[in-house]
Image (cartoon, rainbow, N blue to C red; front, side, top):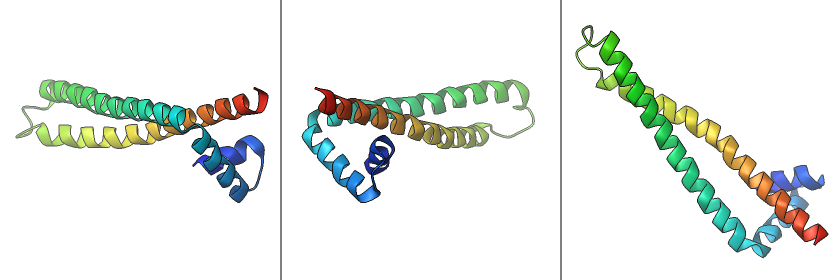
Length: 114
């Protein structure tokens, strides 16, 4: 992941970018670790919140519209929550990549021009 970011930033080959990305992370381990931790917490909270909110809305709408047609609406609500969690995971993977990219751009810029 970090090698791909370095390749996009500096237009170097993959192996050189992997080496440069590794040493960039090594030199700035504390800052990158702190941002990665906060980013991961935001991602986990976001996924759980989105799945819970969608599950709650699905329960409300199913209770109102189809509760008299089915035995229990818990199964369909769980399926909705699982599908929502999968979709949220896909979207948050893009968010996580964007956070890593912006952070590496910031640190590389700081090292080059400071």
